Image (cartoon, rainbow, N blue to C red; front, side):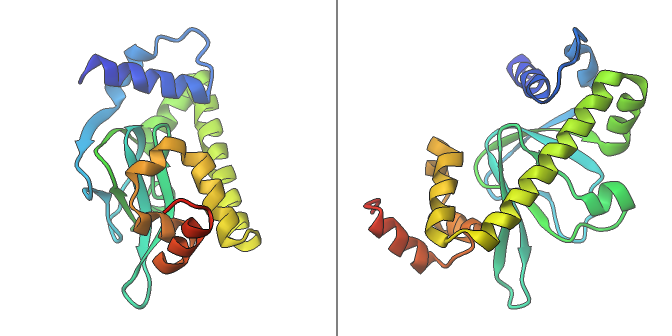
Length: 196
């Protein structure tokens, strides 16, 4: 794999947790790297996907299909974010949702059981795993709270703040699904904000 991709993975890992001088490059053999094209799936609903996949570059999404056949974005993930199905990695059950690249993406994947084994052998990896799971839980809590407590306009403005220039690489349809509104409502909000 490209040394720049490995270096970026080391930077991402170190941004989540201190590895106390551990040479992370020596630990990268546990990871597999993959380049994804836009719309390529990381895993699909019904798959038992036991990897934790860290986004090295690009943007992807978690989504589900509602009872009417429409897509609903659960989350948008970018550099430093993670794709995993808790149902699969913890219980060995099929994923209830899809994970898909929106833009060209590079991911580094490690089987969850291997990540847990690294944590059993090395305190730094154990701390990393705990902090990673805490970040995921905090993000999920914020997302659910925002959908319940904020107006559509506030959610869109928060999205723009969070994603910055990355927002330019995400279609308005994907953004509307993420914010939890229709394309028409997003268009109206963007017009009010002078963004059209």
